[in-house]
Image 1 (cartoon, one colour):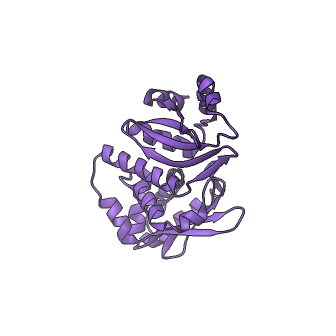
Image 2: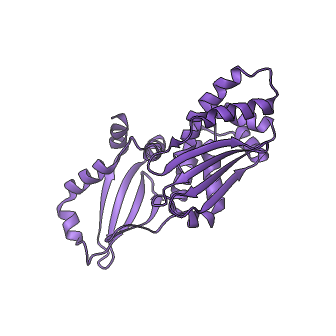
Image 3: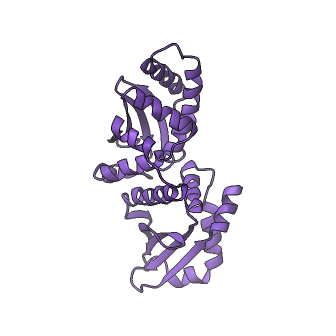
Length: 265
């Protein structure tokens, strides 16, 4: 979910440009025509998590239909935690600027809402999240510092990721949850020591860190957005592995400076 809002912003650039040509229309007509033009950009990839398959306006809501890779998003868990989903979407829109702000203002002016429909690629399951006019007004009127906004955004990104946890990564590794500590965001894993010995991880610490670094594909929009949120809140990222029987642990830390270097490539 965390990269979806960023992609909505890129689509709304076309929306806002089209509005310049539609000044003679009513506000609702402008919105409808602009959304029709934006829909021509679909399907739009949002990385490995899926794609925005269509954007429509039914006279009441701007509807974003998203086709999701269920390996990365647990729709059942998300459906049971709709408050967490809505909170995450609202935080992503917080302190809007540029095209996103213009789009939100137009939706509010027409007394409309925004609805996101997430559909699983493999199961066809659907989960919806809707922001009504009053909720969008609150987003536009919220005041707060940039630092507060970035901290809240990071917290909600962590919360919405935790909705899908615990998550099986491979036959030996389970991601239990993400936590935010003083100077880092921690991925907390449990290792099945019958399959992987903790001593093996500890004896290859530098190689393990390089392997993790190699897997951090910053061209992936969702990961890039998360790393940027960590950097803006002055947080590094740690991968903490704990043995399921011994309780031994090892941690691979990427400092803020290292994350900045990754993002600069």
